[in-house]
Length: 275
Image (cartoon, rainbow, N blue to C red; front, top):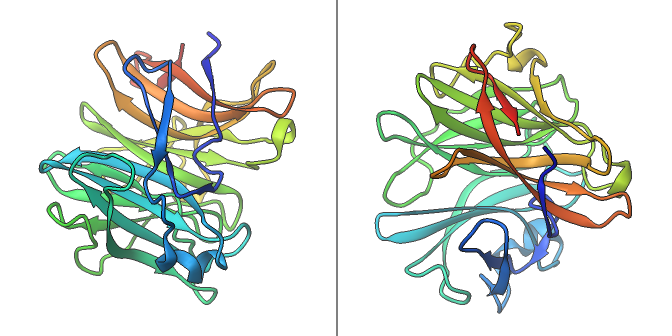
């Protein structure tokens, strides 16, 4: 099935102040303002003074909203992931809580595209990464939302090739790691596509349908460009009342940017597909 298509700027594209859209039905969305209407000067070191912030990830737990987001510039890995919290999630109510993880030009990873997963034991983990040596994972403190400990896990990579935007979804006995391969943010010429691997452990080893580890470039394709859908990627997956839901960014043939939404089914072997 084609996706529901909602005009949007896409999760991977930077936005000033992090706008907050909301919806009661998953298809009609309304913008209600920015998380940081007065800017985020603590991010200037990574953005070169730009107000553009990237790839927000939001969760509600412990009676408050947690917002992880990244600051960087295209093509460099001088980057950081920050955390803010809010009692309501409303624009202007967010409090800056600090840096979760950062990368420098001397590192072999890129600290952007954060995504939270809570494992079966209630432990919090943050996956992130783009290009360089691939997708990483760190533990978070489940109260503060900041980093816990120094462990650093590598869960996927393409030998320096195009991989980014991880999200991990727990279903049954498996953790499903979704990533985006190839080129984002080039309008109708984008070649982004959604890939997946799975593991019985949140930290891996993740393998694709053929048994190839994602750390060795593996990945089973879930969604790629087709027809008027160009470069679908920077996905997230969550469970709703009717099904698991895949949300992602894509471009129309005109170059206009949209939010795509499809439901996910699972075949007899437990591998996801869109419908």
